[in-house]
Image (spheres, rainbow, N blue to C red):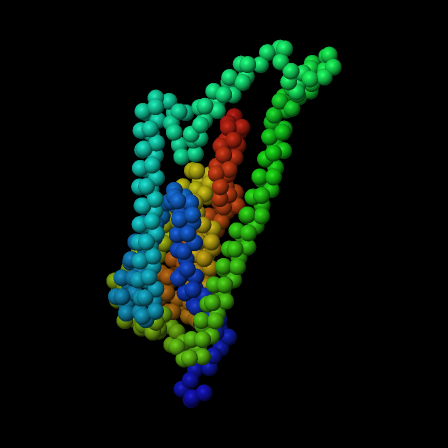
Length: 357
């Protein structure tokens, strides 16, 4: 180690690892939601207002980074975010326009048929009408003298068989509940696999981020910053006193945009009482990236000048963690499917006479 080399302390190592993990989380942040929209063929679950406000935050963040002259890594990440936001917004606009056009075509088809139930769909059988007609004909052909399985046997057995055959029909709801049980049981492994996949994804981000920091430290791409300069340097080696006021102002605008972006999404989830169409991993990576980003700053130094200089980014990252916690609560209460919204509507209907707090 050269005489000018700075010794690596535990706090500096943890700060570097946290920053590297945050970088890995940000890179893969939007991928889960892009895949979710593609698999669903719809973007109704995610709020466009949320995405547009978030895009404003990323644009002002990029402008502030360029104005302040931050390190190329920070600028490159900000540019990447702007492009990724544009791709996600474009995907959402495409699916919304596509689904609206399909709904319009279905409405026109229903209007031409004159009845909503007679509108043809993709899954409508071609021989549906003939099947119903044949079934009606076979029903009309039955007579009292016909020999059928229900009247075959000793005299009087027809009455007993018909009486016993009526019992299951009277208990249709219970039989339906039995048949639905395997379907509900099949959903449990699917949900378990989803949680397992999300957990493994987070673990992989942690491993990739830690390994990336270790490689960067070995090759000399990352070096510890002296603590006695922490109060005078911003992230990326910028003097706190020489930072333009406009760059700081853009940083605060970006923080406000990040804080306000999730509010429309929270309200949309609350109105629909469902989180269908949202990727839970998307918000898990967001929480991980914000937590490790804030930890990387505070682990490096808690001196007043350094904290004040990074305050916009601390507010933007640590503040959104609270809102992410609200969305996690909505995932837990409403679920990711439509059944959450239906259950909520049933509860509202049953409790219609109760007082609303």
